[in-house]
Image 1 (cartoon, rainbow, N blue to C red):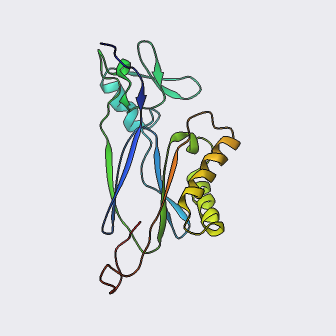
Image 2 (cartoon, rainbow, N blue to C red):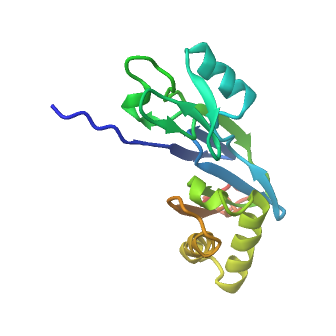
Length: 188
């Protein structure tokens, strides 16, 4: 049987009442807009992070610099310290792992939307630029998260991103609960 050697990152969000649960592996990133300010929901699993470097080295791996910090493997190197797949970095030694980090955040009525995106976006736009771009798009096209996500991808390509660019924008709706009474939980 043929062994596939490709890998990927993972970023998921689950909204449960007023709590946003986020789990990730790799360098896809989540960002929340709270009163127009960017609040990072995930921390990239990059080998230049001291805790990630230490974990790679504890598993017998090496971190090198070739344009960016990378985990050196027997035949390839990766710019992430965790991923799904990438079997060449996991056999015979587990230089990288697929273990996710998870965070739960209590949402507040000032929270407007969140963005889940691949590193191709964040290679060329910082968190605040992403929030500002989505805010402008939602002002021009009220409620149109698809237009905002398309704008982010177009901006990343225009700014010269050389990596894949995927983005999802999720608006948080606050207001009455399902019974029509009081302040309800966040909805999408």
